Amino acid sequence: MCVTAVESRPAGVALTPSPGGHRPFGARVKAFVALTKPRIIELLLITTVPVMFLAAQGVPDLWLVLTTTIGGYLSAGGANALNMYIDRDIDALMDRTSQRPLVTGMVSPRECLAFGIALAVISTVWFGLLVNWLSAALALGALLFYVVVYTMLLKRRTSQNIVWGGIAGCMPVLIGWSAVTNELSWAAVILFAVIFFWTPPHYWPLSMKVKDDYARVGVPMLPVVASNRVVARQIVLYSWVMVAVSLLLTPLGYTGWFYTAVALLSGGAWLWEAHGLQNRAKAGVTGAKLKEMRLFSWSATVSPARSNRSSAP
Image (cartoon, rainbow, N blue to C red; front, top):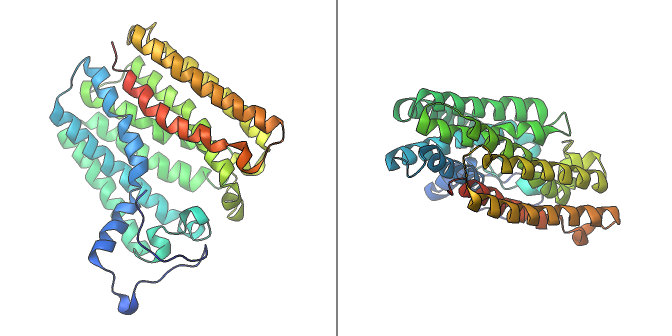
């Protein structure tokens, strides 16, 4: 993720801008870019574009791909900025988020709120005028779900926050499909389900690593309120369902043997990592030896690759 250039400091201690309130223009630009969480958006867009190829059954109109990609960035960026505005109190107390722009003082809360709302409005109009209004509605729905349902209602209240909050992260496949066809189909629904079941086993390993951060601010991520054995068992369960759902595209006629072969290989490798994590958790392994980030790193690679294979014949 892009972050602002700030000095090292203890978590929870906000930096103030340079003397006299001067904040260099270049640093300010980087700060506003950081509000959009570019690395997360990159993953979302990687799951959007290949779906457009599948929906078009070939190469879609490149102008449509460009406008959809830009609209997706603006929409997700607005959601992320509003998320940072709402979470600025706990971001200041967590090591992982201690250098976000609102915490460092590079961007004020009012500026962040205005920026997020502006991106939300611009992205909706952009989609409606340059793509279609179904895609605009889906993008706006994803933004509102992430900001209101996940950030405001679920994140600080339930250990299943990532499960249901992850619905917002599944929306790019529907947006990509509707951008091409102006409708939805079972293929889009299946891909939505793949990302839905991918999300918990992707994020829970990261949450296992930084659970002390979440515990410090009272966010009940599953690894905070449950043992490593319970978390690992849930990761394995979701992983099996995800792999099974990903194989539904072929019998329904949307993909061919190549997709099936690669999906089986990558899915098998994923399950190997998931079961390895479960075995280490059962054995009582903790700390660095638990190697929970191996699955996180693998899952970050497999999801884009899995969507990319959707366009294979």
